[in-house]
Length: 114
Image (cartoon, rainbow, N blue to C red; front, side, top):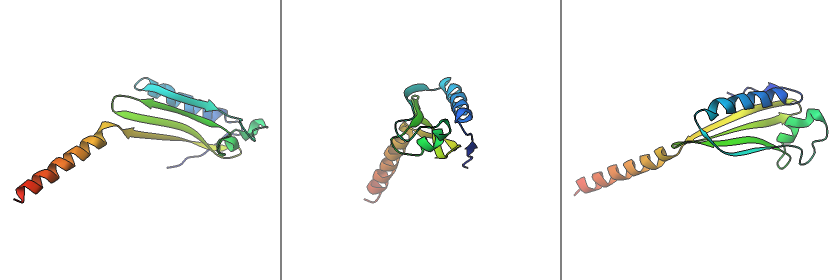
């Protein structure tokens, strides 16, 4: 579910982003952090989310990992004063393990056919 933030200067979004990151840092290792804004178009203090919405203007994201997961958190812009937080978690080894199990089952079925 997408819940947008009405936050004219981006401060509430940054606070929510930081709180979420601090919570997850207790369990996951930080790999990379990208927090910059204002590369282009960003001239007024209320254009924070608008800038995040344009490619190349700004990015507010962090990448974290553990032994078996990758997590990315990104503060995204919709328009002036409006944005949302996107969190994506993906498992690292489980997919390759599932592929190997599927291949083993297929090989077993193939050998049973003879």
